[in-house]
Length: 564
Image 1 (cartoon, rainbow, N blue to C red):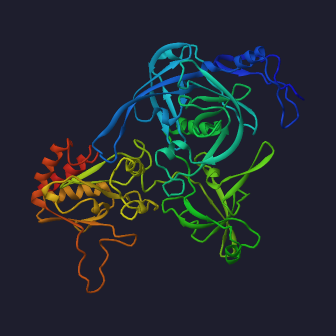
Image 2 (image 1 turned 120 degrees about the horizontal axis):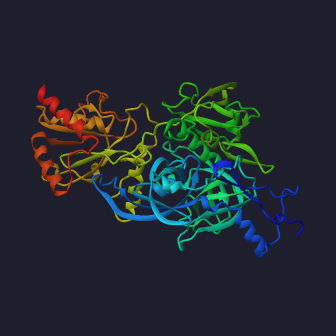
Image 3 (image 1 turned 90 degrees about the vertical axis):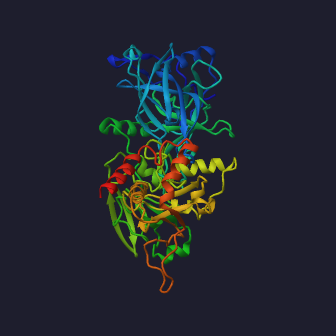
């Protein structure tokens, strides 16, 4: 072979009192594609000793998953393991999917079998990252921490993934190269139901593809470069493909840590706040008077986004921060001397909060610049359980109403495989693909009907989005809980429910001349509902007619109406 890129020895050193582990740089060739001969046994031992494996820890989790289809229940208890590593400041880093829904979380060090109690300090499902702390000071004694790499690794550079995969109890090292720099919605949020093409998506994020094996149990472990610096965090693999693993870049992890250190929380990925379509059609580009420019066409703008009233439907975006945008909606970066193209949203998602973004826009043929500080945008359908979503419900005469959320849709799609009744897109799911109009705007979904004589005549065909109750517009599940409490103490004979009839439906809009008032979709007798609900709750082991978080709202509404 033309080159030996492995030094005869790698000298390890500790940096002062920080206990950080670092290796000295080996001599490198000027060749952009260095070839390495096969290591001898002795050389392999030397190279492996340069890895700071003592910063790697193993997690043991036990927990239960919530049910959004039966929101007063939880799933069965399960246990799992994962990997993490030590950060400065007595913190541990791992994947969000390693610690989500934990009721018990424990951690062990590589050289100590004792399990220490741990707790989650911050979780970022959109980044699949989490910070964990251990309150027992003895855990941190003589424990070094990892060092993050300063830059993205070069393509084809060597990487070693370290963790505790299933099938053994000791630390495991797999070796490969950086084979791709890409951007995508990570596997973890996709598994939780995030659809990358919908308005509930937070957008793509930078990711590294490696050809080192990442197996179950490796999740959350560090991927080291030749210096022993962390270039990324092992996140997922492709079980049906050989040697395809994905690593979250160190720069994304550092962005998450920096925000937690400054605010004590993670607010989410910054988002573009507009939908766009590619402009591959030459005829369309001529129609839009683009000339030789390339770009994408804005089709809608989020009302709660930073670009509201700055960007307009019909604008053509040609540049972001001075970088060209292709007709497919991608921008260029240079990696290892090669130009590669990434999705536009990854330009935004890797920026720290408060950093401005400038777009060059063609509006009716005129070029102008639009600058805004982009931020996370609340989704009409909350995305992640225990972060912005809870399985809340309101029960009225056996009719179960809940909030339209991503976990609800995700659990429905999973349960369809085992026979859950079909819910059509028109009934509910088409309404998911909308921007949130204001902080109170939610989807209130009639999810199911627990049969009782009070609701005879209604069934699964009535599943849909609730728009009004007793002619009062329902903008949120909180509205419904309050309206129900007030109506129980009222004098009206019937409870009247109006469901969505499509995008143009509004229960408060006037009917066509001569058509008369709209007939409610569901009607229940007020005097029979309260007694029926007590029996229905007892039969189904439901603690109350609303979930815990909504119960004070319902009870206050009842008491206020009695006092009035």
